[in-house]
Amino acid sequence: MTAAHPSVLFVCVHNAGRSQMAQAWLAHLAGGAVEVRSAGSAPGDAVNPAAVDAMAEVGIDISAAQPKVLTPETVRSSDVVVTMGCGDACPVFPGTRYEDWPLDDPAGQGVEAVRPIRDAIRDRVVALLDSLGVDRA
Image 1 (cartoon, one colour):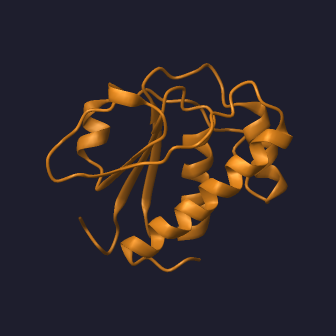
Image 2 (image 1 turned 180 degrees about the vertical axis):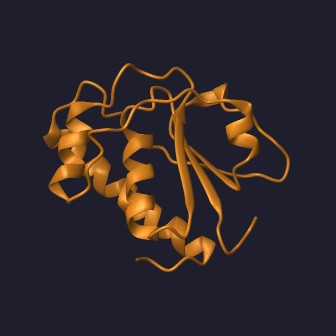
């Protein structure tokens, strides 16, 4: 891992909620010190509107984000891969650090149900930054 500028990939099934919020939190809190991406094993058509609204409440705009397909190349080029409910769909490569974050799926939920997921993701992102030795912006 390149300690000066690690690369993190967040993966969930649809890349429409959890992984998008995690990507946005990490980008926001790391201030450019981490390369961050997200992808889905079966990407949806659009980002969950409740996730967009929940992130807007904390001043982070993900309204322009688009779900992206997970590729082996994306995984291979990442120092840390964080999975959130994608099961065995995520390829595993030696030398890559993997974490699994068991978080509720915000799909089909209203913003009230997404807020605690958003906040849990923030807490996990903060811990991830600490583990990487990256100061928060």
